[in-house]
Image (tube, rainbow, N blue to C red):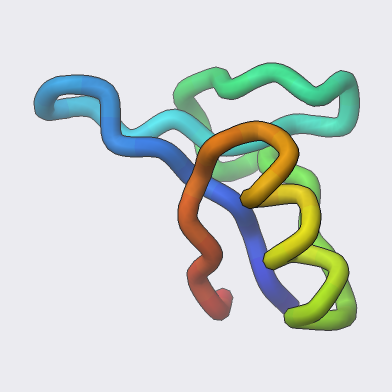
Length: 51
């Protein structure tokens, strides 16, 4: 599984299902494919990480 995240100051925010970055990894949208996660990261300006 892959997630998209963004570092905001000292906090890490994760891309959720509504396309917003919010704190809390439990709400993070998890992607099966790395390619899909990379596409979402480009669209929303985040970084991809494997979970």
